[in-house]
Length: 284
Length: 103
Length: 163
Image (cartoon, rainbow over all chains, first blue to last red; front, side, top):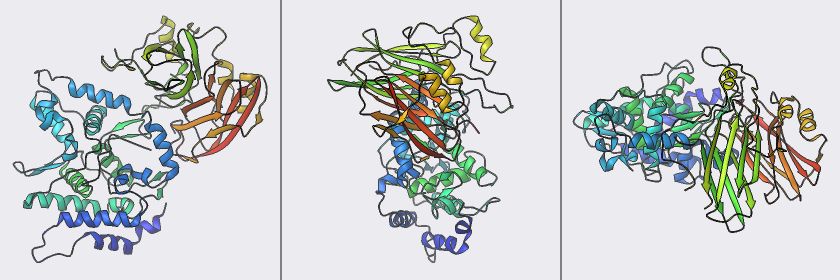
């Protein structure tokens, strides 16, 4: 593990300097400028990788892994979870309504718009949250954010959006900008026993190995979710990935769909605007 | 009831390429569950593909075949629209069968 | 249509005989009399699957030894992304192929899979195997009664047997 690289505070400072725009007198966040700088950083770091290929995570950076992944994508291991999700999505609730009644366009081809900032509520709403709210509004118990049902459902919804560019909006509303900044701050803040921030691995060291894993670049990292992980022998949600990543870096994870995780998803998804949805994805 | 077998059989006129993905845990019998008990061995032992009553491919599998096993092979002598029969039996005696059309 | 997608999800298990239920708990190879799905001479090679080493498994399966041949093209990754699902395939230009099999030398039992190749079926198989640790993957091709092999090492960092 390249501990020395990851703990070099000099590099951390550099990463921060690249992304945090010089504060103006009003100290207004500029998500569009951040996103452009984020994209430019990865494109410069990996000139041979096509922009849309970043959504394939470690496979965009490692040829041997890419071949194994392509071979499995011919008939992917997540086929069964995807079918289960399609079935679940079409099955009516006890009151006769369906998920389609809760979402624009009947829930088909809309995944790229999540998370979004709900101006009435004043908070970020993720797809997982929206799905559970739909269930509860129709008299059904919510699903666990870290188990199979939610993973299958979001896998299907992602699949209907495959190829569509990520399209997250951060309206010019101080609350939305605050949520965006909250997510950004989480991303760059070191935490836990190993003292890693998300950026330590996914900005400073993509393509490198951390023990047995090859790190994915942060650009496009949301686009492949939910993911079928060989490690889990199954499909797992975005919530599950955020929680387990925190645990693996020996930080105490937050509750799934807590405000900070929602804001983190908001920030990271916005950073990948324009890149295609590739979910559901398969990963080691 | 949904089959555990997913098949894609595509003919180019002369050769039919068959890919199959089967939903099965393929447990080795060597792994412990969260309580510390061994999960019993549970894996497909034989998988057969038949065309016009003739076996065109036979797989003998052990538990070292990956979970939700996949296999790809090709054979001659079939045409678009023909039926392909796929069947498996596992170490508990369970079976599943499906008929697929060659595209 | 090549798939049946009309019905709910649960995997259908047709248990043959009450004995099957009792045997599930034993945690070892519980082999029941094989239903006649395959032809009589395509018996499941139970003994070969029980062997530990690849040499013993090859002997049990074929009754003879193999010679290395560059006409057997074995495709494996250099470093397995995850030992529980390693894509492995083999193809050959040898004629009269009747059997193809795969061995993983450091697995608890070396024989992973064996395929009967009837006439008219091409000598090419792709499958996904479990590998416990870094070791050799060996492909055996039976061509006109003789055995030919190809061997490649695959590095495994995260073992495939659930460790």
